[in-house]
Amino acid sequence: MDKPLILITGGGRGIGAAIALAFAQRGGCRLALSARSTDQLEATAQACEKLGVEARAYPCDVSDPDAVAALAEAVRTAQGEPDTVVNNAGYFLGKPFLELSTEDFDTVIAANLRSAFLVSQAFAPAMAERGQGTLINIASSASRKIFPGMAAYSSAKYGLLGMTRVMRQELMSQGVRVLCILPGPTLTDAWNQSGIDEATLRERLMPAEDVAQAIVNAWELPAKTVVDEIYLQPLSGDL
Ligand SMILES: NC(=O)c1ccc[n+]([C@@H]2O[C@H](COP(=O)([O-])OP(=O)(O)OC[C@H]3O[C@@H](n4cnc5c(N)ncnc54)[C@H](OP(=O)(O)O)[C@@H]3O)[C@@H](O)[C@H]2O)c1
Image 1 (tube, helix red, strand yellow):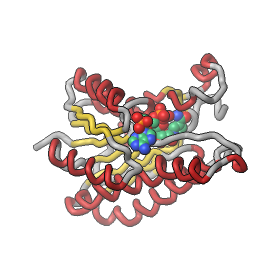
Image 2 (cartoon, protein in one colour):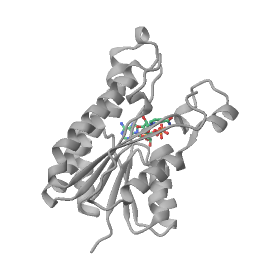
Image 3 (cartoon, protein in one colour):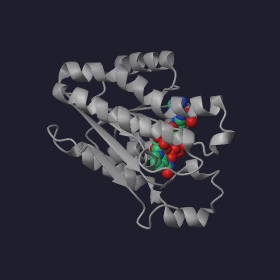
């Protein structure tokens, strides 16, 4: 039997790349990685292959329905049906509510919420038909707590948590596990424009590898058990 196929969106850098590498280090799986930046995707896929795991790159804008349909077709043709989908792709925009344009708002919702909707709808039906599969949605501590300047991001991440909870209720009877990960501040390029100095970020934020480890640990539980939600925070709390 084929090793389980794990599709990770936003797998080119940051938390998504860390998740891919954590699964590759664990072994016993195959990886499908998606994001828009081909060079980053290829680099992550190569790093995973060096660890002995099949990893393929699928450039795709996962907020675009046609692109997601093409992604589903390409993955099925090359590697088969994913056993697990990690909806990790996302985009952070910090801006005061009164300065948010409609375009800003739509871009953030599309990258963080619409993407998970589209990708889950593309792959969950086959999981439900098989009576087995795992969907892992990467939400945020901003799905539970509000921070000034995060109106668009929090709208998307609160929405993602809500959608995930409904998906779990609907899909559990068909054998599909639906997990939600809610990380607090995690050290990735997403913080590059934060204005916070690098030394502080390195000292205070969680390493992406720790978030990835929590995801692999939860995924490894036998299929009859689901870790509904994991809320992760840096030891010293929010910035
Ligand atoms: N870092 C944190 O503190 C933190 C905390 C809580 C939750 N999160 C969540 O964790 C996830 C990963 O965040 P990160 O910090 O690793 O961010 P990151 O370093 O900016 O990486 C984001 C990834 O998502 C991809 N992506 C963004 N928009 C996309 C689109 N429309 N289509 C396809 N891929 C897209 C990016 O690739 P391309 O740009 O090449 O497409 C990239 O690979 C996000 O959902 C984020 O909201 C992060």
